[in-house]
Image 1: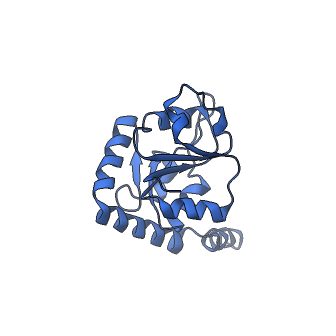
Image 2 (image 1 turned 135 degrees about the horizontal axis):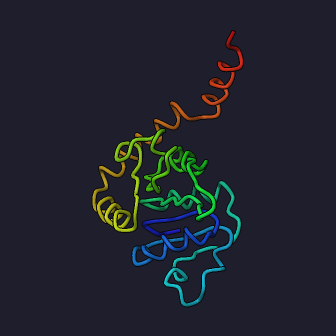
Length: 169
């Protein structure tokens, strides 16, 4: 696990399409289904492991990288608005996260404060170039992202909020 940028998650076509556009970076792709990447895809050389990855291995992968990229699943029939649990896990691990612009992510976190958000491939590439060259800023954002998750977005916080709603008169 020695890539500057990593993606950990299941293979989906929309994810492969995004990651293909950044495979000229030092990118590692790991997770179930990545053996589906065709031999002629430039992404093939970035696939480090196709298969299940346990939490301990995720942490090793994240720890070795400068940047973790997260691309939510979506297709033309299924809109995605959620913040994947992986967003919280990556931030809790203290890693700098670059994530696609999902409405819930933008509601819960601040772009360029807690993480970085991209809306298209050009912006993703620019974000990666910028933050690979700006270590102190990248690390400061990662620290703020971790603090925000630990202070506002743990299971404790969610259960407390649910109990407050359930216990209202």
